Amino acid sequence: MSILIKPIITEKATANSELNNCYSFEVNTKANKVEIKKAVEAAYGVSVEKVRTINVRPDRKSRYTKTGIQHGKTNAVKKAMVQLAEGESIDLYTNM
Image (cartoon, rainbow, N blue to C red):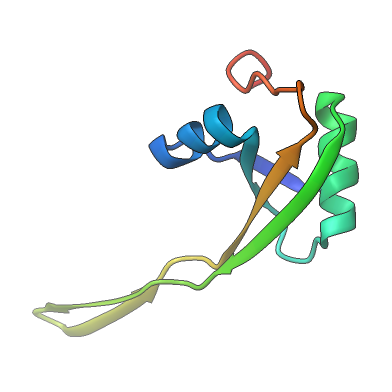
């Protein structure tokens, strides 16, 4: 079971990493904060101060077609915001 799925690279996440030294990752939905902390420390060789998690619910959509109403949804994901110790950073662009 892989804990870290991929880093989240958006404008908001990049600004948060530059200003607050806080990086965002998409993680396994079954992972807890302790497992996420250990996985980030092992993968990037940094020390983690704080981990915050959020469960993102699936978006439900429906559209009207000739054959009737089609229903669908996206997958539910879990995001983790990882606060690093002072003076440490992760270079996400070279580790990908």
